[in-house]
Length: 124
Image 1 (cartoon, rainbow, N blue to C red):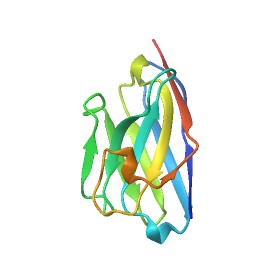
Image 2 (cartoon, rainbow, N blue to C red):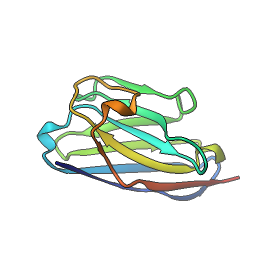
Image 3 (cartoon, rainbow, N blue to C red):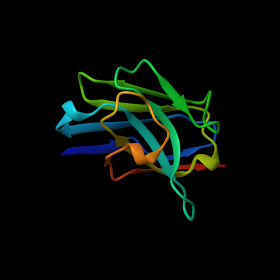
């Protein structure tokens, strides 16, 4: 089993930055792809960003492209999401996800493990 714990969320004003972290523990050798998803109140969970096992390939939702950056430190079993130029519409619970495949993926079906989420609130 793999456990994922997110941190770094909070309440910020529009235009500010936040950096989310996701610490993995347990059978971390089984982790390949990792990603971030988010769910706003009353909406379905949506893809935000993903990264492949090595960190050499990433992909982003159009809504965050150019503002968010996903990265990982495999030596520390940690995933990051740097969020710049935050907008009120970025307000959501952000979830870290991990799966066994090598390549990155925007589909939640390709992730086996999920964190409990961290709240990000952006005020206008």
